[in-house]
Length: 212
Image 1: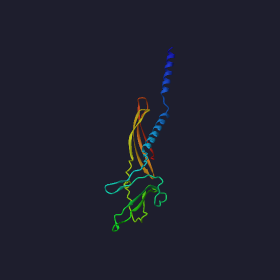
Image 2: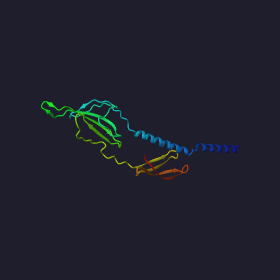
Image 3: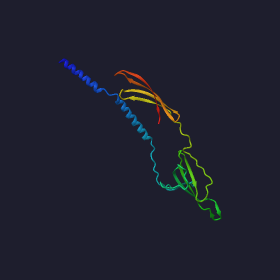
Image 4: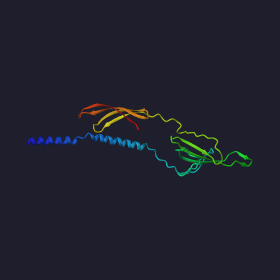
């Protein structure tokens, strides 16, 4: 009878030990899925919200300037010849009543100016100007928002890590290093590892990859 109880106890321990063991690929698969989900979520958050412009009325301001009427039209054609591979972004038309007087009691006729905003293959924008009432003798296009140099990218990163399976913490640090046209991400991490149920050690890893 005692042998049966011992055999049953050993069988129970073997069953419990076997049921508690987790294959090594399960945590790796869970980490991979979590990293992929985090990357996809970050990409989704970084996408700009699409802007659908709608019609808006003309507004005359106190200084005499005019906020032009906005009338979206995907089929609008520019009045100027568009450079090769350039994309038309906006078409505008302004009519000006000159303040000068040609003869006493006879003001100069209104002058119309056609403007087109285009995007060149390199991503930069240009303004085209023409007039059916005369020759454009000069003009100036002054970029404002994109004139300032871009902010210096942040190349350092550091943080904490946690292993859900082993329940151990870690720390890591990374830096992006430009190499020719690539950005190489180099880093190091120090993790606490569990070598037994109540015993832990320290593991150090170096890592290198490409940022994209």
